[in-house]
Image (cartoon, rainbow, N blue to C red; front, top):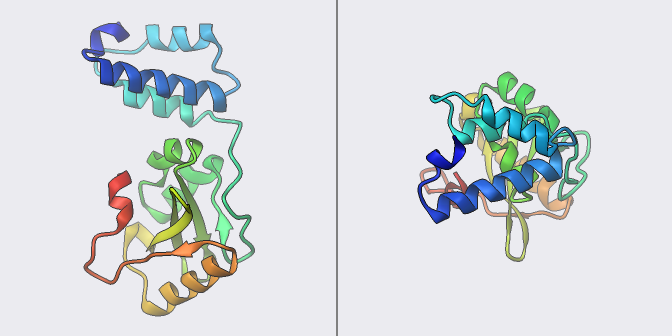
Length: 171
């Protein structure tokens, strides 16, 4: 069933990486559990949806790049679904990026904002700040997030309004 959906080597490699990611972060992902879930995979359900379902069950998480504090709070993969619902955004779909160590998210409660950090070759950088429903935040909030991120040892590269953020490369 799965092999019928994998029609080239690049996709096969991605599926293999996904299974490795699932196994390293989900204690319930035994060979038999993975096999059983693949056997019940319907024709309309994609491998991506299957993988996201497993990643929602993750119970082993990487540490955030910085521990943050009361007003710069790391959002763990376990909290991403509920935080995404609360902020009405797609945060839940980024769990794989967090588990793979490519992205990290921080809540800034005083501004009802989420800061996005990406891992670049030379370290972690905050590249975006989102408000409710991925809306913009005001200049005061952006300045505060920049200060908090730098205070916690993160670099900041937040584009001016209208510029394309570097993290669009990861979407």
